[in-house]
Amino acid sequence: MTEPQLEAEPDFASVVLGDRLDLARQFTQNLAKFGEELGLIGPLELPRLWTRHVLNSALVSPLLRPGLVGDIGSGAGLPGIVLGIARPDVQFVLIEPMERRVAWLNDQVDELGLDNVAVLRARAEEVQLQKPLDQVTARAVSAFRKLLPLTAPLLRDGGELVLMKGANAEAEIAAASKEIRKYRVSNVRVEVLGESITTDTTRVVLGTVRG
Image (cartoon, rainbow, N blue to C red; front, side, top):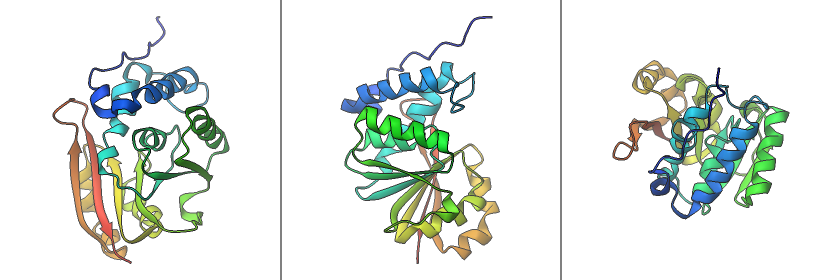
């Protein structure tokens, strides 16, 4: 049985990441080398690491605005580290409770020279931030109705949810009507990213939180 091989870099990587592609390559190589050993990715992820994980995360970068963006449950750095690479003009705080993953994230921030990224070891529901977030993102963390109590309270009045979701995004929104009202989220919608360049598109649930 042959060992899974790292997916070849897709042609559209340069379209998504531009002059930040070299840093993304370095991060992808690091994740391929250490990710399974550290429990960050599963053993079957190498053949789709670029498309399903790295570029899937990077496609979100145009939705971000200069300001402070939080990434809840950063884990392997997807999307937090990738977005930090793609958007050096945005400040990021990566919120992750597990010590082993926090160590990995800090190592990547240092190795890649990401002076716009800070790592905070905390559970989302317990985190104390010095100032509220302008935007918050999360990927593969929980259902939308369970994510809202973890993310909406961290945002400033008028702050935005930018939550990566799968094919059931619309159903998750429908199931979260009570939480949407409770946390005063408006203009909740799904945006599909990358349709013109890849079949492995990214779905994002967007919404504005009023204090």
